[in-house]
Image 1 (cartoon, rainbow, N blue to C red):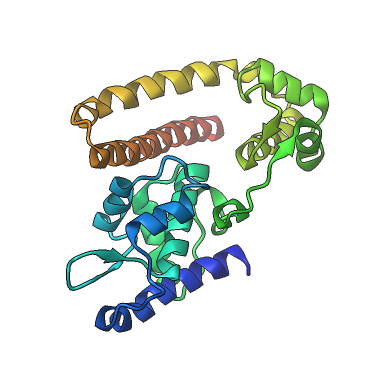
Image 2: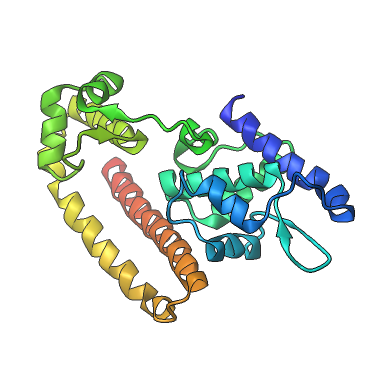
Amino acid sequence: MPAQSAARAAASARTGSAPAARGAVGHDLLTIGQVLARLKPEFPDLSSSKLRFLEERELVTPVRTQSGYRKFSAADVERLRIVLGLQRDHYLPLKVIKEYLADIDAGREPVLPGGIDGPRPSILGTERRYTRDELVRASGSTPMLVSDAVSASLLPAAEHYGEDALTVMKALVDLQRSGIEPRHLRTFRATAERELGLIESALMPVRRRGDGTSRAKAAELAREIAGHLEVVRSSLIRAAIGQLDA
C-alpha cells in the first residue's frame, strides 16, 4: 500500500469506526500497554505519557471503556506510527502533522513542508539504511564528497545512514554544481549548535517539572521553536536574494 494511502486509510478508519467502537468496545482493540509494545521497537522513546499527550493534542482519539480505560484500534496504531515517524524523521511540529492528517481526512492530497509527499516508508516500519557506498550511489555523489561532508560536520562519521543523510547528500551534489563545497558550509554546524542552545534555554521551565507529560511537551515545543527559527532564516535569505535582483 502506498504510504499516503496508508495514512488516508488510518485517518478515515479512525474517524469512520469511532462511533461503532464507542458503542461496543471489541476484543480487537488494544490497551495503552499493548500499543506501546507494538510501537516501541520502532520508537524506543515512546511512553504512555507521550501517548496521552498526543491524545490531548487530538492526534489520536482512542475509545474509552465504561471504566474510563483507553482502547486503541488498528487504525489508531497506524495513525500514531505516522505521527511519530513524521516527528522523528522530519522534525515536524504536531500542529503541521495535525493539519496534514486533517487534509487527508477531508479527502485532499496534502504535501508536507519541504516537499515531502506524505509519510515515507520508514514510518510504515521499513526504514531504509544505507552504507557509505550505497549512500554515494543513491545520491549520485562521490566518495570524496561524502568524506568532505563528514569533515565539515554536515554528516556524522557512521557506518550506516538514513533518509535524512540521503537528502543532505543530494543537496550537496546540487550545491557542488554551483561551486559550493562542504567546506564552505562548516559554519552551519556552529549555527545549528547556537540555535540548539536557544531552544534548550526556552525549554528549561518545562523540563524542570520532570514528569513524562512535560518531557513530551518539551520535545514538541523544541520542534515548534526549530520550525519558527527556520521560517526566520528562510525569510532573511529570501530578502537578501531579493536585494540581489534589485
